Length: 229
Image (cartoon, rainbow, N blue to C red; front, side):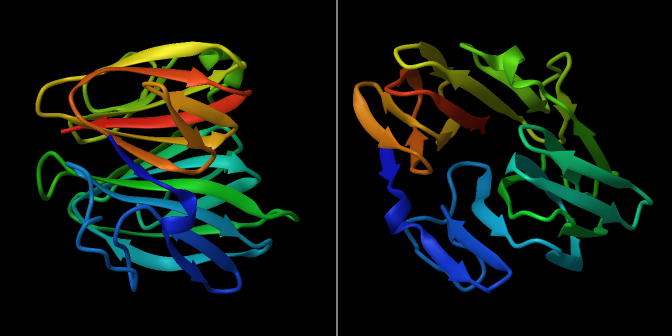
């Protein structure tokens, strides 16, 4: 287990965007934090009202946005437009190439996790999707939000990975098995937890190796976990 405390994450404050980087990204470079398996980016972003990311391109990457508060409005070169609110998820398969923008058109800051996972195959057909996931459906259990492994009810991504989330009351716990040769990365969006008995605070990151891991809430918590190659 590798714990990446929030205070040690890469930090960039652009005024309109306050970003923390769990892995090397943009001007933040740490050779010890280049990714975790196929997981290449996990950014913890706060976007000021009426600002956002102007149109820019991507290729051969699966980009998952988990909105923690506020909302994000998406527009892309495929003609997709959509608003994703707190607790919900959007996914974009960049594939052969796509240009998109992400704006906070709300009157309050938007906070989100932006996660990039390497695509299974290069030059695949690009795509976009979004879905509402009521927090009640993941109460006390891990729910699959996005998957490239055929999980029913999940948004589809083109990677051998799953994105899961749970809301836990104090004292509740869930188990997660990381298969041999796979990598999991876990971040509590809120609250405080223990992973295999080790204390983890809100917005810390935990890189998990293969094995059976116990995630227990010390206080009411919301957790997001990615399991990938």
